Structure formats: structure tokens, C-alpha cells
Image (cartoon, rainbow, N blue to C red; front, side):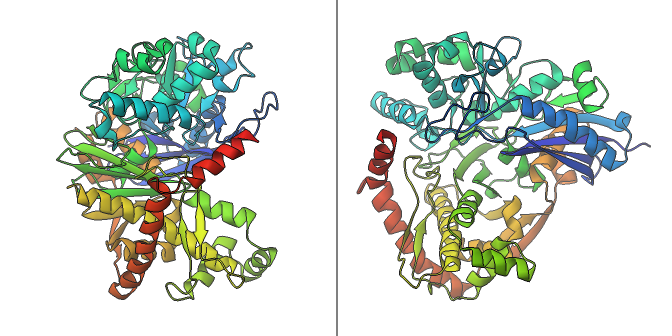
Length: 549
């Protein structure tokens, strides 16, 4: 009997990767990566050179199609399998990443009249320029006592659909009025593959505020701006596809791009974090998966629904059918380490790392590991890209307390590593105190390669840490959904059991180290609440001054 294969395509912040996977056991046969030519536009708009304001992050949707044209054929070639043996394809995307489009799916940025308008482009997940709009949405929701608000931990993010949509209406009404729909990139790329627009249940719930089959009311949107009244009905509402469903057959055009047979199954779109849970065999209640990269997204299934302060949302069937999917996250993790290395580390560290045959990150980590816990005398807040959970406030910013004239670069690096671990513990503790405890912590993403960091997370959270047994978690997760969409498994749980990969309890907490970290975490919590809960809004005042200059 001929083996069957599926393809998972993972769309990240800077590149897209395609992975060929065997349906029977999840064996990875070949992969390829394509870097987006336009990368992230956060300073200037590539088409015109126009300067972008603070906290903007845009992309060109054509880069996403180029991934299909390059990475998929190259992965197929690398795998050595025959194209006719591929039975399905699925994709995952960063979220909330939004595209204003015409009725035929054409992005507005591809029209001559809008090609130099920043609002016509993709607003990437880390586009935070809609924070003032998110603040108004949250204030109005609290004033009106909207029933959906507690499902999102008490406030929504500037990253999500409502805030980004309101920003377009008020800053570029011509774009808003011209667009047919405001579409998640996760769904737009599926549209390009199968020729049909299907809105996936995951982003509709977590990023579009769809709860119990309803979006926020027209009255709520009108209270924000009368011209915004029809936002849900007119701009984001559409047919919902459940995760693992078949969105439609691969079109002839997409077949030409990819080299895959026309007519194979195209799975409903999904989010990079949420597809990773099945890839890590984490589909049972209380198993939290942390996808650690430039940012970290924490997802977990549970059989109970409750209000958890500062979570990104709880959605019925948001990860797998039959359970409530919870999401939380940290807006900056790997991005913080990269910022520090790129902007603050002296050249001597780069030279020493090169001489030792290491990356500068590994060199700094090795130096940091030599010191005892607390020896640096520092504590940092991991808010360089704002706080996603549990404060849901992107106007916050990072800080390092305890610097002296003897503080070294590697000591600061360690304090930043620790700050992200404390941020994760804050999330874990908040879930536990809300009645949905984390029973197992599973890590996926590029940062799991840092063994010192992983042990630190175990010690700080006091949880054993399991690790996904693949470098391609989201792509494997997408492939699992493709296997379900193509009819090879009855549901995602069954496919995950056969195709998922995890190493159990690779790291376990050390009580002595945990006690030391408890002391530092206490200081982190003090700073967290002082700067983050309104006692001192200096970070917001400084950001406002920056905007006014």
C-alpha cells in the first residue's frame, strides 16, 4: 500500500516554511523555508518610503503567496516523494494578522489608488498602533458591562480585529469604506489555495470576539463611532469553518504554484500557537503549551469555562472540539533578547563568541550560567513590546532595576532571560488561582534549544517541562489538521496521538534554585503591580511624550 503524505505550511513573522509529513506516523520527510522579501515594515512603507509612526508593523500579502510558490515545491523536492501521494495541505499563521480585501480577495494594497496608503497593507500581529482604539473599546465595554468582556480576561488587545478595524475607520475611512472584508491572513491564504473564503473558528473567537455564536452588538460598535456600527456584520462576519474541516479542494492555479495535485483537501485555516498543541500531543485538559520564539503564546485546553484575568480569550473548541481552549501570551521574549544583543552588547562579546565558535547568544548564556542566582543584583520587566498577559497593555515598556557601574552585559542578559520566566509564572499562577490549573508545561519553538533557559523556566514556575520532539511544531500541527481534513483521521485528537511528538519531563524543578528564584519573583511581582496596575503610569506618560515629539 502506498504511503500518504500531507503538507503543513507555517507562516511566521519573517518567513514561511513547508513541511512534508507521512500521514501514518508523523514522520517528517522534507522541508523548505522562504523568507519574505518585504519582511516587516515598521519604519517605512516599502512602496513609497513613507515614514511609519511608532508601533506600526505591516507586511505585503504577496510575500505569503511566494511561500507557496517556493517553499512547497522545494520541500516536495527535498522529501523525494511523489506529488501524487500528497492528499492534503494546511496552513497556520501568526495572529491577529489582518488584510483589508475586495470581494474577490484582492488586498487593497495591490490597487493603484491604495498602494501608498499604509492602512491598505497587512497589519501584522505586532502592530500596536491601535492601542488608543483598544483603550476606548475596553472602556466602553466596561461601561456597558458587555457580557463577552470577561471571556477575554477583562480587556481586549490592540493586536486584535476590533481595535485594528476602528483604527482604519478613523484614520483611513476611504480604505475602510472600500474594503469588502477585513480578513485574517490565516483565512486569506486558504482562500488563495481553494478559491473560497472560510473564516476559521479559532481566530473568529480569540481575535474577533465571537462568543456563543455572536459578535459584539451593533449598539456597542455604534457607541464607539456611529460609522462603526456595522463592523461585525459587514466587515468580519462570514461562514465559520471548524478546525480540521476541509475548506475546499486545491484549485488549478494553486496547483500550478505548489506542484501539488489539484483537488486535494485544503484544511480550514488556523493559528501557529493553536496548531502546535496537537503536534505536542497536548490535547487534554491542563496541558499548557508555550510556543517560545520572538514572542510566546500559551495555549491550554480545559473542560471548564471560567474567567481568567488578562488571558487572550477562552473559546469553545478553540484548539480541539469538545474542550474550551484558553490562550495567554507574552508580547516579547526572543525579541527582547535580540534587541539587547543588537543594541546594547559590546563588540568584545561578539569577538569572544566568534573565537569560541559560538553564537553571541550562546556565549552570553554560558557566561550568565556561571553566576549564582541573584548575584547580578538585578530584576527586569519583560515589557519591551508591551504586556499581553495578564495586564493586556501595550503602552507598558521594559525596565531593568539594580544597574551599577560594575554590572556586566552578561548579567543584564541573564536578568532579561529571568524576566520572561517570571512573566510566564505570572500567567501560570493566574490560571491556577482562577480554577484552571496548569498540570503540565510543554515547550515548543526555537527557544527550547536553550537548555539553560528551559531549566530556569522549570525552576521559576516549579513545573516539570516537557518538550516537543520536532523543530517544526506549527508546521507539524498544520500537517495533522491536513490529515484530518483529507479524511485519514476522524478528528484532531486521533491524528495528534498518531502523528504528534513529545519528550516527557525533560526538565524538573530544583527546590534549592526554586527557593532562590521565589525571592526574585517576589520583587518582579512588586514591580509588575506598581508599574502595571496604575500606581505609577510613568511608562505611559513617556510613550505619550515620545509621540508628541
